[in-house]
Length: 522
Image 1 (spheres, rainbow, N blue to C red):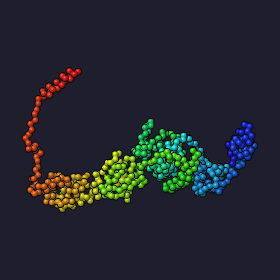
Image 2 (cartoon, rainbow, N blue to C red; image 1 turned 90 degrees about the vertical axis):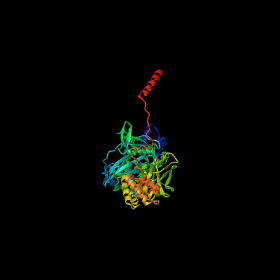
Image 3 (spheres, rainbow, N blue to C red; image 1 turned 120 degrees about the horizontal axis):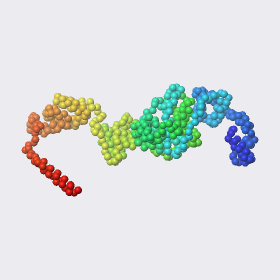
Image 4 (cartoon, one colour; image 1 turned 60 degrees about the horizontal axis):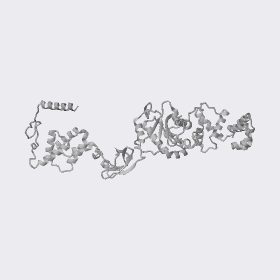
């Protein structure tokens, strides 16, 4: 192999008066190489270099594939590792490395079989950070040759350069960004200390001299997961240069020489590419393999907690058995479920502040509670005892048909109209008072007539009236006059009370004496 830098080192030593043996010892290279480069003049080395430059032909069998890739990409300048990865994906292990492929493509350009047209773009190098310190994320778009538009979410850990990639076929929403973030934390194996983002409208509403206002969902997510955010200033791409390079890398190395017709196909191929290339090969920035460095970085990441934005996922759910009274225990406090879940198994999902309960078989959410900060508490909701599993119409029909009396039907109709917002509660009271005990129909008729006449239309009032008539039924069961109707001007059986009055002069005298004492004290 012809190494120009090695030739320059040998010639530099020669000019300093070193002998061949001294140069061999100093540079640690083969004596024959030293002898060859020692004797060459610069023009001889250039001729020798040109003669041997394209001697390696191990990629000659892939020439058609290489030219086809460049043709599909309109002979743009492609990332060499992307072309190598494409051949490796198609043929498996290759007989040469990336440098050999680079030499062969240079040969194709030299003999005019390949002509390139793209300019080279340079990027600013950013400082290295310690493990677990920072993660960067960014977005991109790419139009495939099939006209499928891919929306790109990328993230990477700054220290190890371990990368995550996902595509979708529509613009991102805030909750989708949060979901991808949670999945990337799973992929990385934990949460870093700091997240670097730009001023994207999905996450940031506005920024004014460092005062960041986040979107509602993203603000809740930050607080829930206790994330520390770093929002880049406008027109400051260097701050997150690593992720900028990754978006470019995804487009140039992965997408540029592939075509996809569906998002699922792109994501399946993308995860293979992450494992094989993006995380499986040596990073040019660290000169190390990210897939090996991630083992060290994971030691510095903190565990990911359950998130309210993932409550509909089966990940993180636990099974619990409700008690005979339909209570479940979470964090030393008890929470009541609907009564039809007595002695049944349910699934729970617990975040930092909330408890969600799901049906074991349908997976639907039953209810949620704010978690109690204190142990030993018991919590319930009024609707738990309201037969929520029965429709209100079914309960109304049941109550209406409890008795055949016209007064009963009239009372129930007026009750449902008067208490339209509390129909279910009224129906449960009707069942409680009049379904499970022997009812004297004559007394019930008296109570119904009285309540309809006086417009007292709740079932609780009806029960009180029925109880009164039942108590006096042994005396005069047919007389409504037993319940006295009091006149609005009635003042009671006692004599009118006389209220003493005083002259205003008494109060004026008291005020005067108070002023005199105040002046004396001053």
